[in-house]
Image (cartoon, rainbow, N blue to C red; front, side):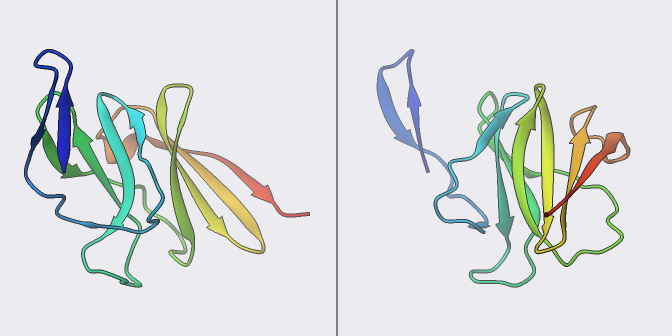
Length: 119
């Protein structure tokens, strides 16, 4: 991974991204001073739905805690809603669950916001 510094007006290489992007064209969602992606530990792994963050201040990677899901058979997307990190859990073709993290980094702060049914 490369980081561009406005202060130095230059690019520099930092430690490689330690995960594999679930969605190759995902550009990451910015919230709480970090970019977030849905990742897996292995390439083309069916065990996905980890959330990785890259903190632009510390230039460190971390995994973000997630809520306890009743059913883990979904496709996840990370978004930002009202400045909060938001998880969209797509149980296609039935519904999408929306989870919002009220206090960043606190697993227990995830609030189940809404289930949206497909019509």
